[in-house]
Every structure is written in C-alpha cells, then in structure tokens.
Length: 428
Image (tube, rainbow, N blue to C red; front, side):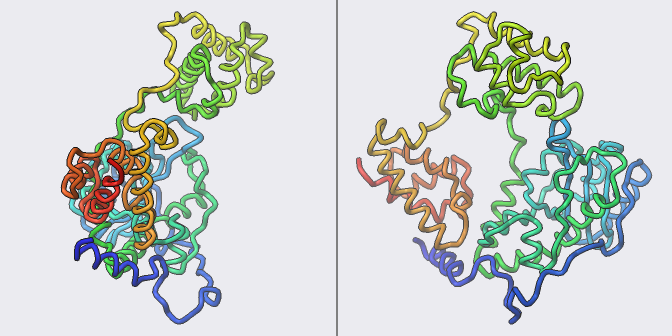
C-alpha cells in the first residue's frame, strides 16, 4: 500500500465504524425517543401554483443543505413516479408537495441550485425526482454514508435510532401513496422522514471524517449525482419471476407475449403489472402452452374470478406465441456482456479462476479491515472483468487504468489496484 492507503486504513481500523459517540450511557439504559410530531406540525400539502411559488421562494431563500425525500406507489401503480415530495431546509421549515397536482417542479429545482441535497438511498428517488424537474448538483446520501462508515443496519429508521437516538414511525412505508386525499397519519410519517435528515447528515459527516473516509464518500456522492439515467432494460420479460423453469424457446415466447400484453394493460390502467396478472400465472401458462381458453382457465392464476374477456386476451397472447416461426422465437439466453458466471471459470479458464480467487480474497480482507461492505470497496462485477480479461501489462498503473475505465472512483483505485495487480500475477 502507499502511505496514503496506510493512513486511511489505519484511521478506519482505529474506529468502531458505526458506533455512535460514547456518552457513557449503555444503549439498553437509553432507549430511543419516539419522534411523534414534526417540529412545526404537519405542513399543508402544496397542490396549486400559488402555494408552489411560495414554497419555491422560501426554500430558495433558505440556508444550508436541503433534505429531500419522495414517496412512490410501488406495487399499486404503473411505473415509479413520485406521488409526494418532502423537503426541509433551515429558514424554510418543511414542505409536502403533491407532484400530481404540481407536475413541474423545475422552478423549485432551480431555486435549490448550488445547495447540497440530502437523500437516503438516493438512487431510489433520483429517477422520479428527475422526471418532475428536480436534480441535485451536490448530494449527500445518508444510506451510502452509513455503509461506508460500517453501520450494520442502514435503513433510515435504524440510522436515526443508532446515530441520533430517535425512533421513527415505520407503519406507512409501503402504503398506496397515490391515494387522494392522503390521510393525516401518512402525511405525518412523510414529514418526519425529512425531519432529522440534516442532523443525520451532520453526524455522519463527522463520523466519516474521524474514520478517514469523508473524501471517499464525497467521491461516491459526486458519482451518483453525475450518473446518467439508466438505459431501458433489454428484454425485460426475461426477468419474470420463475423464468428459470422455462427451458424451451416456444415457452419463452409465451412468456414474452404474455408479459408484453400485461404491460400494455397495466400502463393503460395505471396499475402495477402484478395486479393485472401475476408472474407465477405467466410461468404456468408458458409451461403448459394451453390450446384453448378452457385449458387456460384450469391453470393457477387464471381462475373463475377472471372475466371471459380477460381470459381471451391472455389466450390470444399464447396463440401469438404458438404461431411464431422458429426464426422468430427468442434465444435461450441473452448474449453475455462480460465474463461468464464465476462457477464456469474453472472449466473455461483455470488460470483466470485462480486470479479471481486471489483477487476476491484480497478485496474481502481489505474490506473487512476497513469495516465497509466489499461491494462498496469495489463492485464484484469490476473485479470479475479485470480478472477475466486483464490488461496486457499487469502493472499497478495498467490495472488502475482498467479500473477507471469500469467507473471505479479514485479512492477505490488507490486502495484496490495494488491488490488486483498482485492477484493478476497469479498464474500465467
């Protein structure tokens, strides 16, 4: 390791990594304090242009970082749009905004330009926030900060409890946030989600600084903020739960046709696809390839509760799959973009398998020493790619360049490149 690496590692090893500051009171003697009500009460939901303009002005005039959260209706509605946006900032208090009534929040996003946004598990909320015109230039992710600091549990409730000593209500995280009007208990829960985010951010920043990991976190946050929106997934029907049971190409075609038909219905009705037709029902139909509506009705998931028109629409999808020519049928698997599964390495390339084993061991040991998850030190996919097709020159500099090409951050490269360069020397 370099001197800088040794310093960072030694600093991390000197800390507990996830233990809140010791105040001399045992945890069992100081149970968390329930957080029952926002400091200024539950704010009125912003649902018109005038109220939005007032909130935009207030938050633009506020100071310091801004806590941001969003509630979706996963499992109830189609897609991942936001149905409530919560914010809090010094000088502005808290705000709850209805993005259905106010679908364009770009003026608010512009008013917050230059401010640091605090989110918990930012990658979950950023897509739906970007859809309504809100995207941070500066970011602090309290969940990721907790991972880097070595906390064993990084959910918002667990973090607030272990770091700040407060207990958040947990009862409304999975409700249907598209409900209108939103019940008062849900609004209270939503407002409390941002109530302590700024305090949590400040405490985690201090903890990361003490562990010598603050610069690591800053690089991670910058990478999240700068990341482009994810590309649409190719062949999303292949992710149908239970797909591993489907072996024949004709059966795969049934899955594809049913998945596509279901998706169209779900999008038109704005409901979760699983509420239209379950994945298990799609798999049952694919395995059976029913010849008639009557045969389809006998399958699990297509019972008597389903109307005749629905049954006919699903049978039509099955019939379309049955009518395809051999050349139109999907291939058994997607072309591999990268190395094969690790379990196949020993047969395909034993030397590469030895490199991967050495690399995994070294990365795992370093992650344990630094008290952070291995996948946050370096992604397993990156390790596999470097080990499967190593650079022509096995030097530390060449490995560092390869890691940078795969998107590793400077702090990760500094720590991991020496380990991988040594692992690549294993075998020929």
